[in-house]
Image 1 (cartoon, rainbow, N blue to C red):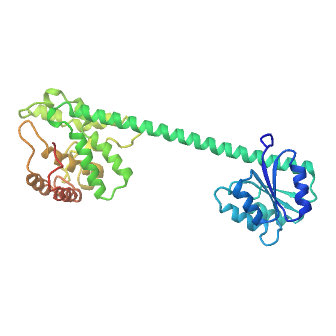
Image 2 (image 1 turned 180 degrees about the vertical axis):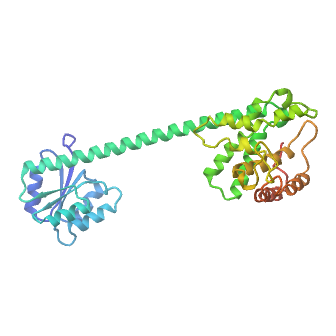
Image 3 (image 1 turned 180 degrees about the horizontal axis):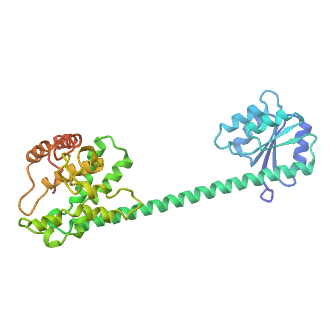
Length: 343
């Protein structure tokens, strides 16, 4: 059986034609015979053919009806079908091709023609299967590479966030928490998983511009001079410039540039007001301010939750987008144990 080119099932109600087909095909193929659709289904249960030769005009269940049954079966739907017919009417062939037939073989059978047509359809089927397998394999490899790049991107972004926070021991973990709180707000605001992921990245890197600020200013325990304060206020622009070079995540610098804008238009660096401030930046602004109050500083401990709640509420419509501020307030009300804070 292994030396044969393929497994052919002939479904033909005429005994003489059925045996003639077997005689022609069995020299090159493994052949099974069925008199009707019922017998064919029993044979198919045991072994699925590589090609099906099907009589178009069988009684009870004709070839077209049988094809519909096969196409509803996942395992049989891809098996190529060649119709056997004595009808020279072109409309029958058109109907057969519309039903999904690969070819027609007319009676009386001509051995060379039958062998060539079955061989051609069998080879085409194998090429299609090979192509499908190759596409599946390449798609799988591409997905694996995409996941590798995604993991690498996450690792790099997390490393950058950690390096930013490491500049000041009193802001350790700040970027990670801002990202987490931003996602919580975005989720409650009905943002998609994809949008939440983008906001997470923006939150992680919102302070990346502080890389360009001298450590002496970042870690200073006393009040900043006017000049030092001016330098510090440049970190949103520095951050946006750094992130503008990352083309794989468009607009990644939104959070970095505009997380210090205020809803009333008195923020920096661009003095944007209301909804002119990108939505992601408005979300991150609330999360950033919240974490600043719910974290330790060199000059104070974590603020009590009721104090933080009052400051967020007071900033609605002035410092913060009222919609996102309200969501943050709800999150705080649900956080009865005050777990959303620096530990």
